[in-house]
Amino acid sequence: MALFSLVASHTDLDLDTVAQLSNGTGEVASVIPESSVSGAVVLATCNRVEIYAEAPDDQSVEQARAELLQAVTRGSGLAPSTVESSFKVLTGDSAVRHLFEVGSGLKSAVVGEREIAGQVRRALGTAQETGTATGTLVKLFESATRTAKDVGTRTALGSAGRSIVSVALDLTADLHAGVTDAETRAFWEQANILVIGTGSYAGTTLAQLADRGAVHVGVHSASGRAEAFVADRGGWAMALGGEKIHGAIAEADVLIGCSGGDRRLEAETLRRLREGVETRLTVLDLALSHDFDPAIADLPGVDLITLESVKMAAPEGQQESIVEAARLVDGAVAGYVQERKSRSANEAIVALRKHTQQVLESEMERVRGKHGCTAAAEEVEFALRRMVRQMLHEPTVRAKEMAAEGRLEEYENALNILFGLEVSAPVAQAGLESCPADVAPDATAGAVEPASEAARIA
Image (cartoon, rainbow, N blue to C red; front, side, top):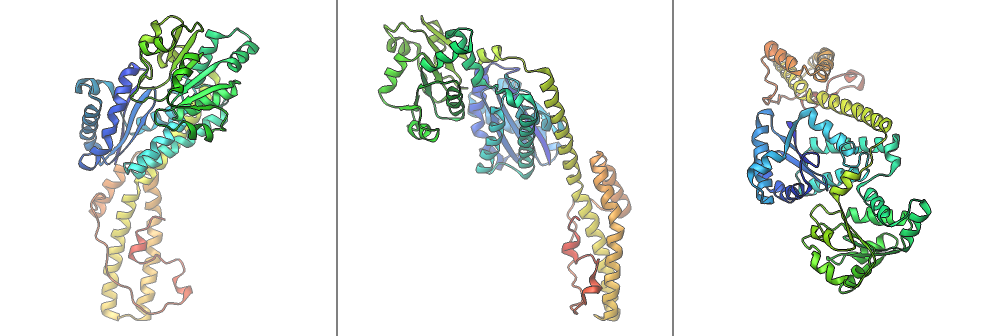
C-alpha cells in the first residue's frame, strides 16, 4: 500500500477557495469503491482541506490522486485547473510528518492552537463511519492524535490556550474595552452577545465566553438545536429561535457566526434590523463558508472580524515552546515510520515461513509413506519443526531490521534468488495432516505449530 495526501491550506490560498474545496470533499467517499483509492480520510477546517489516502502501490498513486481531484472538482464547482493547482501532493513519510505537525498545531494560523487536535480525531471518526478508513489510515490518525496530546501536555503551547476563537475574542475586546484586565472583564460581563451555530466552534466559543465572564449570551441555530446545545453546556446561555433572533441582533454588542450553513446575514438586513441603534457592533465571522455578507464591514458602527483578520493578528508562539513541540513531533514521526517499516516486513517473513513449511510437509509425507503414523515418524516431525523454528529466527529478525533501515527490497530479492520466492505472490498453503496419534506434553515442548500457525509472525 502507498500512503499520500492532498493538501490545500491558508498558507497558499485565500479562505474562500479553501471553503469551496471543502464543499467538494463530499464527493470523496463515493469515488472510492470504483477508483484506485483504497481508502481516504478528509480533514477540513477553517484554514485547510486535506485528504489522506491510500493507493494499492506506488504506481497507483498518480491515478488515485487524479480521481480524488476529479471528485473534488465535481463537488466544488471550481474549474479543474483551479482544483489541480490548489492541492500539493505529499507522499509516504512526508505525508505522515505533515499530519503530525498539523494535529499538533504547528501548521495553524494560530500556532499551537488546540482545536485542530479534536478536528483530526473527528475526521477519522467520520471516515470510520462512512467506511473509507483503512487500517493504515486509522493507525496514522490515531498516532497523530496521541502526538498532539503529548505536545499539549508537555509544552507551553498546550497551556497558552490560544485558538482561532481566543484570538478573535481578544480582537473584539481590543475594539471595545480599555487596556486593563479589569476593563476587559467588565466589557464581557456587560456585553450582549449572540452566537449563531451549534457546532464545534460554537462550543469552543461558548466555553471561552464563560471563562471571560460573559453573562448575556444567546445562541441561535437555524436547525433548532440551540436548546439542546445550551442545555448540554450548563444551561447558562439563552437559546433563541424564531423572531427572537431579530431583537437579539438589534441589541447585540457582539455577533458571532460559527454555523457555516447555507444562510447568510446580508448587509441590508443587518442595517434594517439595527436602524436607530447607536451602540457599536462587532461581528465575528468564524465560519469557513461565511455566515455574514462581507459588505457589512461598510455599515456605520459595525466592525467585521474574519478568519483572515485572525490570521493576520495571530500572536507568534514562544520560540522555545515551538522548538520543544517540533522535537516531540520528530520523535513521534520517527517511531511511527520505524514501526510501519517493521510491519511491512511481515509479508516477506510469512512467505519464507510458508516456503519452509511446505518443504517440511513434503519431507514428512515421504517419512509417513515409508514408516506410517508411528511414534518414530512423530518424533522425526517434532525434531524437524524445532529445527525449522530455530533456523527461521535469525532471518525473521533480519527482515524486521532491514525493513526499519529501508532495505526490505534487498531482503525480498535475496528470497527470490535463494528460494525463488515472489513475496507479493500468494504462496500455497500445505494441506497435509500430521499423524493423529496422541502426543505427550513434554514431547511438544518448543515445537512449531502445524502449517496454519507456522505462518503466524512471532
